[in-house]
Length: 77
Image (cartoon, rainbow, N blue to C red; front, top):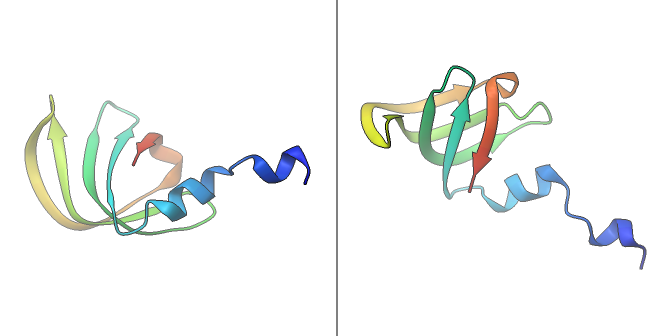
């Protein structure tokens, strides 16, 4: 088994986070929390039960949202 097979790819980590809560930080200091329902190769995400956070507190409940991958700074499962 080569060393490459032991390395987990970023999209594999997202696949393991499906149907689980995630925290998303976007450009412009915006943060969202929700249940990761799907993603694509561009890291566009669909979240259910999404909430926008300000200073760690819920500022808005949004329901289902699509987040464009090019706006994402990090995703924390």
